[in-house]
Image (tube, rainbow, N blue to C red):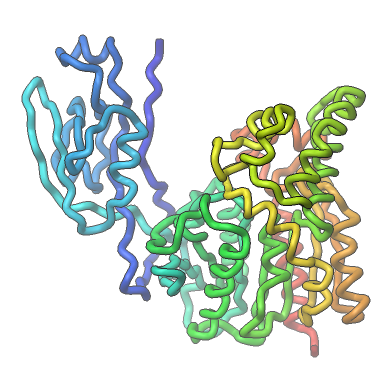
Length: 458
């Protein structure tokens, strides 16, 4: 049987420079090894008495393991006196390590026990060709959020895009050049925009902010609000040309931000405007069909799930309350990734329930910015062109001429080029296909719309 080899590695992009504005956040550490867990076969080969520890398969030069002079073939048995018996143990042990911290490795090398002490080496910083990358921090809760500003390298003032990502708890730091977000934002950076990104609480270098998978929606909203309020400190931002771009749930947050600096425009892609109860109802009606489900079977399953959706989103019952009913429990476990506690679909259940509350129509009514509502015609996640049209219609009703609806053909929720929603569903989990079929139309359309606004008299 082949052993699974895990990689602890950050991707280094094209070089330029980066500045550190914030002084409170230390960079998270980079261990820099390829490894696999010890099993019976490996233990026997190495002459180990127990199947515990992590076998180093390779050392990545320049990071903590290299600095500690760990060797290929070493078995790590403990880090800072925490026993390492699995990949999970290893990840937990290094999760809180930051640049300059002391770290103690206990290893077995050729049947000899060693204790090695060194300082943690930081992860690589984000960098782009012909651009400057600034790492800053924002006071939030009991600590600081990490924000990252990518700007053209030349001096001067530039239009800025305040980017808001979707619902997942993942870092926006050094995402890698094949990541869909990185490709979109890098493309816009190359066209002369400052890109302002904010980590969600608990992600990346954030510290003392709470954990992303434990906070609710309104806490996440307040984090982005705190970040937006920082825009005024950067002299290189053209305050007359600030844009907000929200993707997926980021589009909901984009509409709710209180604009301490007036945004010229708000662009949203793949988002919703109706209540989230309605969204989840339609999701259960349609998504399985796009994925090839039998219509009759899907309809039967839909009616089975409808009471659950109402109790969860409208009556706001907790997962534990819902799980008292066997049908609801089955839905929670099989379809909502319930962890048995407060998390469903990798977020605190309150996150989803609070999405029912914000009042999207009122939010779009109150914005005085120009608005571009984009629907990808192959989007089977935010699958409703009508909801995207409604956003533009609401804006135009209260602010004539300021709302615009746009439909981009052959693009799905994560900017992949596909023929339609059925093909989008087919390739949704095919990472290689998605990497090789990025649709840059989103970059071109956003740039065209923003440049038109910047060149207009209003």
